[in-house]
Structures are given as C-alpha cells and as structure tokens.
Length: 179
Ligand code: ADP
Ligand code: 5GP
Image (cartoon, rainbow, N blue to C red; front, side, top):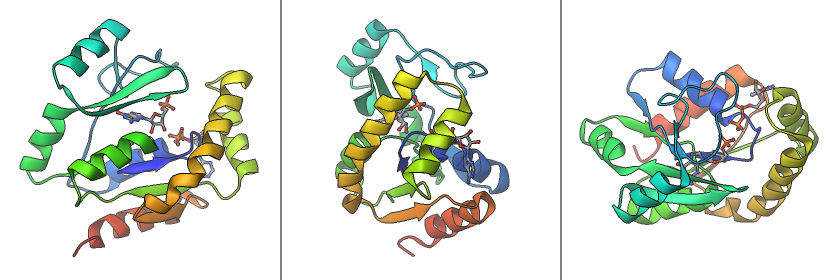
C-alpha cells in the first residue's frame, strides 16, 4: 500500500511499477472528486456521484473509504479480493486513514509512505502539476502537515528524490518484504 502527501509522486511511481515489472495489479479506487483533464473513468478512478458512493458503502462494497479534502475515496472490495486470490501483488495508492484501516484487516499488507525531498519541493511539484487551484494546493499542504504525525505507523519510508532510483528501490522493498 502506497501513501504519501499529495504531489509527492505516488501516481508516477505506481505507473512505473506497472510498466516495468510483472505481477503487480493496481486497485482502481472510486471517488466523488471530478476528473482532472486527461483522467479516464475506469482507469484512473471510477468517478462516482455521492449517491452511488453511499449506496456502495451500505452494500459493504469497499474494503475502506475515507474523506479527503472535500471528497470521498474508496477501495472496491471485489477487485482486490480477486487479485489477491490470483496471487498478484495488489497496489493500493491511498491516503493514510484508509491505509491504517486496511492494515487492521490485512496485517500482512506492506505500508509504504513516500516522502518528498522537502516541503518546498512538494509545493513545487503540486504547483507544476497544474491540476489544482492555489486554494486546494494550500488545503493539501495543510493535510500533509497533519499526516506527517502518523508516519510512524508505516512499515517503510521512502524519499522520492531521483525518480529512477526510487522506482527500483520501491520494487525491491515490496519484493523482499516478509520474505
Ligand atoms: P501524487 O500522485 O503523489 O499526488 P504525482 O505522481 O501526480 O503525485 O506527481 C506530482 C508531480 O510531481 C507530477 O507533476 C510529477 O511529474 C512530478 N514528479 C513525480 N516524481 C518526481 C521526481 N522524482 N522528481 C521530480 N518530479 C516528480
Ligand atoms: P487525488 O485527488 O490527488 O487523486 O487523491 C487524493 C488522495 O486520496 C491521495 O492521497 C490518494 O492516495 C487518496 N486515495 C485515492 N484513492 C483512495 C482510496 O480508495 N481510499 C483512500 N482512503 N484514499 C484514496
């Protein structure tokens, strides 16, 4: 499970793992957030209304779900269970509350927290990605300052400084965990 502040590079890292190595399977989350330019429904997220999201909560359709800066995000249960049964290394790119809920249900899950080299660089990455307004960036930075208190619960901390090295290291850490 991969968490980290918004803009750290989680999405970038996960894409690279899927491209470069076999046996990974990515869980596509459901969200009530609007799609960003270029995001595809069913690939980046399953985009959903509040109503649909609430119905799935009632039907026990999520392994976990959480609120994040004004929207809901959840991990669909059926897909993850199928992939685990097929022996895949399932990647979940989710925020901290959700990650900790999953660790309770799946104690063998490996929790990785990806850190930026500095908060200055984090703001730089969020700004240069150009997908959020200044106001939302500030909210995401505030959330990062809050989340840092909980990184002690993670199995592994990884700094995403140089991308290529970080991809390799991430793969190594996942493959050697518990072996
Ligand atoms: P997250 O999924 O954690 O919110 P993204 O993967 O969208 O973050 O990355 C945020 C921005 O930072 C993107 O514009 C991405 O291209 C850039 N980025 C990711 N990793 C690195 C890195 N190692 N060095 C410099 N920029 C990076
Ligand atoms: P974004 O809006 O930048 O795509 O995602 C915002 C935050 O929600 C990120 O920290 C991301 O990891 C997290 N997130 C994405 N999907 C899920 C999910 O299914 N569950 C939880 N708890 N968090 C998620």
